[in-house]
Length: 448
Image 1 (tube, one colour):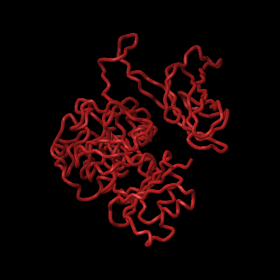
Image 2 (tube, helix red, strand yellow):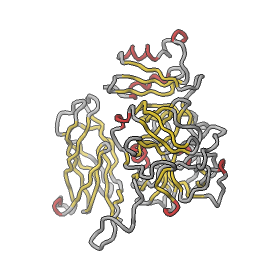
Image 3 (cartoon, one colour):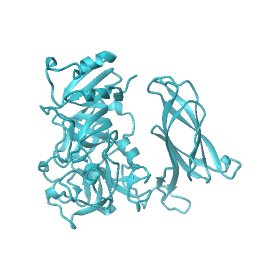
Image 4 (spheres, one colour):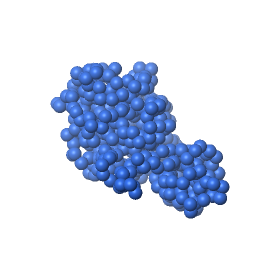
């Protein structure tokens, strides 16, 4: 079956700023900055004509409400002036909840995003050298905390934002400590700041205090047609229906970056304005944290999938702050909190019995075997053989599905190390040719 990326050629057409392919309906949804009468379009800009030339799938053309030709959606906190904040959100909040005014001290105004996120893999993105696995951070967008790649690590973050009266040093709540660079093809617009735990709230301003009830890491296609709700600095609590679940969009970040292409995005209806960037977005029915708001138009709002945020930044979002005084204990009675370090992160094109060549310390990949015919639409079992020089607890993730396991004396490889075969499942989304692309991540689990 096709994927959204197969229809990215439509972004070459005049006014087109986003595309999404709905596999269930065999339909392409095309977002345009303005609708133009069909008789005014040449064949190269007529999206229905170009799609039907290829495969005859259904096409929906959706107006994004700009009323003029545009290069992309707007990042929600770069346009000037940023609108006034909703009542109460421009105030100084201690502890800081998600959804209130917060941004880099050298910028204008935006929104404090989800907390807590625990750093798992400092090698996954750009992180300050002194941060280690296990530390807690708060998230918002790259263009909010890191000024679209322009900020230096260590720059101050203030709550409230400067436009709302925030000043240094009294209103500093942390420093920029990590971010995923904004560049074409990226899946996220995310950055992290440092925290002092006693000054942070795990809640979202004016939302159900039990949210998030969980973190949605998969089954995003099931959100199509569902209601999501956000808490943000400018428009407060607002909700919209999810229209697209794998969209490729063009987004204007201004300055040197201009328009950047982002893939695998959620698109919802209108529920944001400038200054709402960084807002946490929840599935309204379950309370799960599902997205991170970063862009939009007068008709749509663009969200990073929260599972992509975790993977690309190298963090794990938690539903509550870890409690150092309660929980499972080890033999001494001390609390144990798992910290996942990463020593495998590979995307392999595999068929059968493909040997890996990881030689880093920690967990390494020896081989992967697909135990069945890899037909489209099937889930097939795979066997992954991993090795390590040390016994202990480890984790393995195959295309986003994670499991933990032990390496102990029962897995002695006879050469002073340890080796084990781990069973997993692999979903085949499209008909394979000679190879299948599989992303495998893994490493050790430290209890602290």
